[in-house]
Length: 209
Image 1 (cartoon, rainbow, N blue to C red):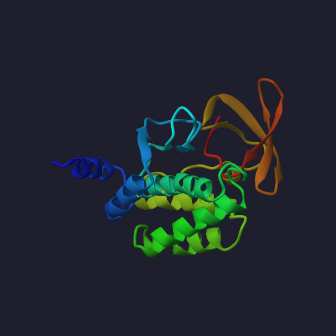
Image 2 (image 1 turned 135 degrees about the vertical axis):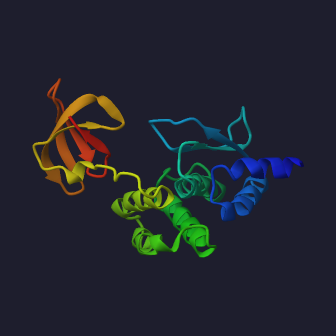
């Protein structure tokens, strides 16, 4: 087996099959060192721009993601690479320049047949304007999880709970919070052990305490 086929055989374990060839070509064309990582609670993926000690682009994505979500996260990181190529270090990591690159990649890969047609309304809502619609982006992620994993129990989100509920964040299960007040897309909550107040996204996955 050639090194190209061996590399593609690894990509096939994680990506939608239709996306393997274009992603492989992108990795090779841009000299990307691509790493598939174990689950990280702090992030789903990462991009590191070239530095004096490593003069190459580096992208990592978590291995525990479903195929279409894996592709979505990978496109997020590729957009960082494209932004670096166009603007260097002169722009904000998730500023308008990155958002345009990400939108263009999402649309191109959807039009290329690498995402299911069911997500079109959400994708259109998400990419309709800059800045991108963050709530629609979170909904898009959840929809891709549902499509890739049919029959799994729907994730409970903070916005699904009535005010006054006690809950734990999936990303911080050791802490019990109380939801106090809704503020647009976020909720003011208090840490029940310390009394400290926090603003938490309504799209945060939670479990009742």
